[in-house]
Length: 477
Image (cartoon, rainbow, N blue to C red; front, side, top):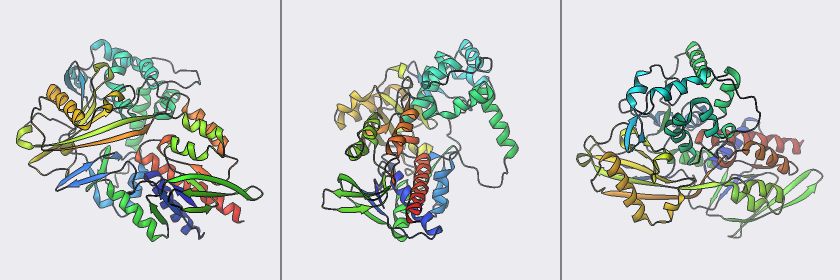
């Protein structure tokens, strides 16, 4: 079989497929192709001296177990590190001032009202409106709903604009007015339907976790990463794939895909690369961005290609800056901050990287990462690198008073890198699955479909592998 795409989704699919095939004692030949010269897709770690700089994602959720489990299976468990237990607060910008997010707010289970009031983020009226969630009836309509509409309905306009939107939409670099609730945060929909209230549902879930907690294993913070960068996850995957007999071919651009039936109900997929590579396989996994996969499948099924093209992608940039610690002083507190859209700033968010994570910079240096772009904010990305650095430096000076000049700067642009799960996304996925169903052994996976985070991509890769193996076993029977 062939997997096109060597990001975390393609590599996770290959790893799981080879592992599952070995367990089932099914001989399988697996080749992974990627147009880039290096593996990992958006996972890209730069090590500069003692600095560890992530150009793409810098961590993953520990509450979603698939990335944690993969690290353990790759022998990386001892490299997992938690966020700083001391500097663990985060802030939101409001009216040009940073306001600390009260503990528990992200999980919607705050235990005290005092921190809410002291934060200055929400007024008494706003808090009262937020608390009305426990009184409001559940929504009866089965139609999809935007994130913004859901949170306004449950918690009020100000809570949505000032707190929830920048936290939730920031994950996708998207616009909460366009994002599908069920495709992005289905848990909130499920809580409302099951408990009639998000707050009641979260409180019930917390009680259930407390009752069933075994306390037997190490507990991690919400976000975790690898000590020397996430590139170690990619290195572990490629090493294990190679040891299991997988063939990894980087720098191969696939220019055409053809399909032929060599037996009733069975297909053969011919993959042609620009370098002359020609492969034939009974099963094919497309782990490329949806718009790339659309071009490949268009000759096979224009309907599926059209559905893939309906998945929009946002462009972003990360700007990393390193300062002498003495020049920064105590200006930076906690992990960083997010910026609501209503503030009308170019900056989306900033992370105090070396305060959030151990081992990211030597003690005499402080590293900072800033985020630009996203839906409705992409115009700034037309500027050159120097202008982007100047922009974030001006923002940091305005917001936290950081006037010092960084002695190291790194700009990483991610064009059409962040898929947007807009309203109706799940319905379109169902139509896509139906359109592809006539081509046995052809599967799509990746961040464009069933989850953008590393754990979700890893989970979907494992499920894609299981589906592919079942198909190959059925055709061999």
